[in-house]
Length: 105
Image 1 (tube, rainbow, N blue to C red):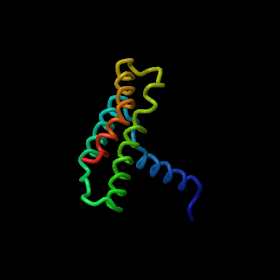
Image 2: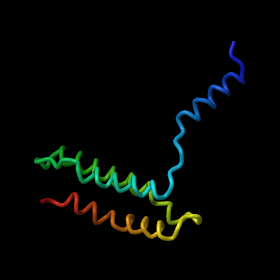
Image 3: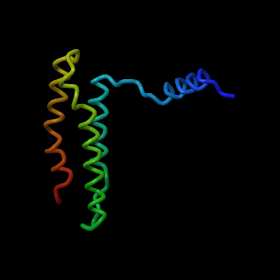
C-alpha cells in the first residue's frame, strides 16, 4: 500500500527533475538571439500556398519565443541598466526583424 509520504516524496523528486533552473538576463538575451537566428535559417518555400503559411507561422513562433524570453527583463529591479537597455533594443528591433525575414524577395 502506498502512503501519503511515499507519494509526496515521489512527487517532490519528479518535480525537481522536470523543473528547469532560472535563466539569468544575459542567458535570456543570448537565447533570444539564437531564436532569431533560427527564424532566419528557416528555409523559405517557393510556393505561396500552405507552405508559405506554415513558414510564416514558424518564423512568428520563434520571434514570439524570443520576445517572451526578454520581455520582463526591463521590469526587474536587480538587473543592470546596460542589460535592460540591451533587452529593450532587442524588443524594439523584433518588428523590423520580422518584416526583414518575411518580406518577399
